[in-house]
Amino acid sequence: MIKLLANALFMSTPLILGACGEVVAERTGMMVTAVEGIFLFGAWGGFVGAYFTKSLLLGFLAAIACGVLVALLYAVTTIHMQQNQVVMGTAVNILMTGICEFFYRVIFGTPLEPLTVKPLPVLPVPLLADIPVLGTILFRQNLITYLTWILVPAVLFLLYKTSLGLTLRSTGENPEAVDVAGIRVNRVRLLAVLFAGILGGIAGAYYSIGDIGMYTTSIISGRGWIAFAICFLGNWNPLLALGAGVVFGTSDAVGVYVKSLGSGFFPSELFTALPYILTILLTVVRRRFNAPAKLGTAYVKEH
Image (tube, rainbow, N blue to C red; front, top):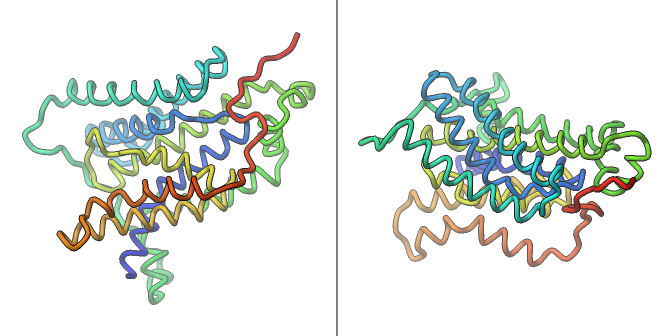
């Protein structure tokens, strides 16, 4: 059980990262439906960068660059070209699936054996890691997990305790008022989407070079959409998104654990699908959403 809970926190890390980026972007009115493509390109870029440089740090930097590129493509088409956010996000996701597979074949061909890199090591926190039970669960994680748990209160403070956070939230609620105040609404939205791209790129690379140490075309398998759903289920609040992320991470860890046990009364595929089933159930059960008033709506400045 202790190992399962520790793995739950490990598996929840990329979901929380992606959800935090989504919260910031959606608070400005931008529904980043390209999150799946951002995750996938981040996973691809992180692996390629780490494989050729033999450095996980450079791999994550490459993943950030890839995430920002996808986010920039989405932002240009939805903010400046004012295309539908859902349609463009879906198109970008499909595009990234093809691009990643194509360039992986171009760079590596068809290798006879899986190409791998050494994934992120566990970094036990001195003294705290020796605490019974909690030490193993909380303080024997990798660096990205620790940074994610710091990021959540930082984003919460940014949104609710700073003037920048007020600007971000106002952009999603009343962009006309923000414009009248002399702040460029579309610039705020662009920066928020790029921030989501940074976190989404890291989250994608977490799966390829932080977890299994390799890249496959199915490595993300809808987890970007789960991060997207966590933002909704967390009511656009980073702290609630953290809780929802841990719940989904736990369901993911249970699926991995049951699959490792082999055959049983219930097929292991049922538990593998548990996070996705949970996403559907919680979304259907949830009745009230405190969504930003202009979420998904392009801003056109009146002359």
